[in-house]
Image 1 (cartoon, rainbow over the protein chains, first blue to last red):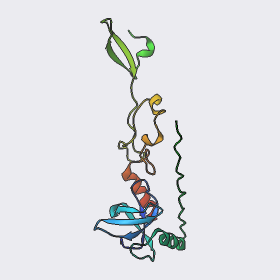
Image 2 (image 1 turned 60 degrees about the vertical axis):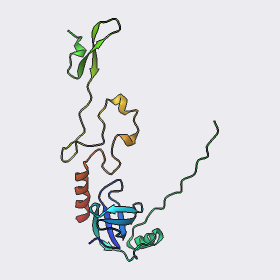
Image 3 (image 1 turned 90 degrees about the vertical axis):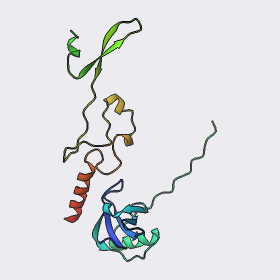
Image 4 (image 1 turned 180 degrees about the vertical axis):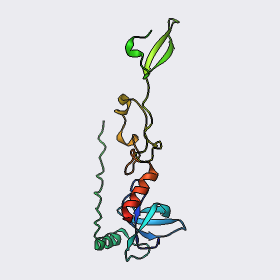
Length: 90
Length: 88
């Protein structure tokens, strides 16, 4: 069930309830996920596989994942870049 | 006998030794009980039990865990509800 390209729902952690896609399976129990969550490693116990499957290659970049999600109908918001605050002299 | 307002069991009595070597009684309020999960009733983690004057000064992120339904449902119940909603 958990394979490269499978759309999953994350059920644990601070990004629980968000949709993601499995990009790579580096170890037996870990998957690299990307999507509405941050691009990170995650235990497959914390993923609930859904019906949809995306056509992506192993190790795709974030932009390719955004494009494929649009085809299903899930828009991924782009994060605003943090402004670097200048230190004011006391 | 303490004054009527202090006879309630929501106050606890503490014996204090003053600098003048007297033993006096001080009355302090008890803390509220631990928070419980909304669906299974088990104790919630990450929610402090303090009197309101201390809770008001704390930042929001130190009063509940940083996940959906944090501070309302325990992690096991939250997972069940998410999976139920998806499998419909």
